[in-house]
Image (cartoon, rainbow over all chains, first blue to last red; front, top):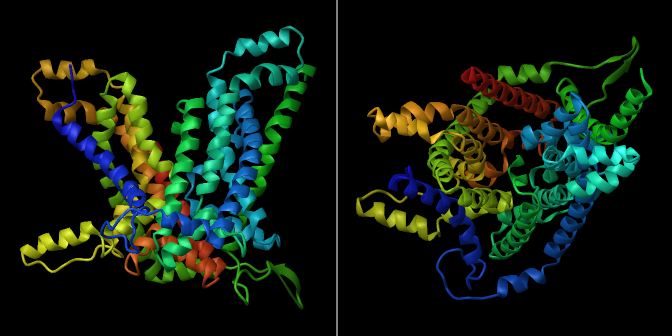
Length: 257
Length: 298
């Protein structure tokens, strides 16, 4: 029996409109030939052109890219190890430490890392941002990898071991290729999380290490120009592409959180 | 101990050790330092004063509960927590009202469409947080087509024009928008598992659509409701960027004051006290949700 009444259809449809309309508005205004986010005046690419001549913006994009790549690489290695350890061995502490950074309000992690870096005399900048990003990305990778391991046929690794492979060889030649889609999905998620992070970066950034979200924040607070719409549209496209690839590689991975 | 068990132990530490060590240093240690910081004196030029104080009697620990005293003696901060709590609670309820029909629609759609419909809920969540908040700055701003149309409409009834941006209303809208997927996903995960035969049975027994919902679907979905409520409430409580961008002076929340204590006033011990209270509240809510959820199941 069909249990989807017209009421349900309408309410569900409106919820999707609520989710997408604001983002659509940002995209539409990025092509609007007006300084104000009000009437539609005409089509233009000029905000995108301005963007590519904006030194600060380019610098911020570069910083974000570097931080994202290093964070992604490091948290993929650590997260895969954590996911494997959580799947294979019984541990009380590791799951708590892996999940806690995801569960607590972000601001707490931001301010505690700020105190930590200042007390240890680690100057705030690219390094402190990367170290902080890794700390919250490890958990996401670990969850994806562990769910991939849980869906794997255990007997394949056992067969490799019975045939005389060392544990490391069995892992490298059998387990790793099998969980690879999960590992790559985790790497893409970590990159996306790092590129998009605002709160933790806000507290751990220093002079000269402005990232894209920090640059957008400054522009939103100080002077709103349609350049924000343009950079937002590009950032959305990038995230969309990465997340589509990640969800193809590891269906259900995105539901991990 | 057999050599196999010993080797297993070694593997456990080789594989689990590095991520464990990393998170101990860059997550657990900073949090513990913050706990300690809440008992320290503020430094002369901001930050923290030294933990050990040297005087003629020797070196001793220089800790205090002064910042906690300040928190509990000044009602201003308690009020701020109550306000943030209220905002988070309203956000949770609005999210539930919007998310429930959506989750139900997805759960009752043909199996082949469900994954796509879920992905459509998650995608906005993966776009940049600031962009999603900024979008509402456009929509609720005084120049926006939406606000001008609204003001024209209410003007026909002789109502004074309203401004929506920089109000508590704008903060709630932003909070709901950003946290909605956290409510939809656990609800959907729960609703998907319901046996449709139960609804058929209720219908055969004469229950109309309204009764079927309140007596069958909703009680069964409560674990999903609690999970979603915790996932929305906890992050919403600590947020600072949404009130910062959409709230103006009237709409500030506890997160804004924490940010201010750390970056502007630079009174770190007091900022740490506020963070500790926030942590205790977050853990309390999470514990409550888990407890109620478990009681529901038995």
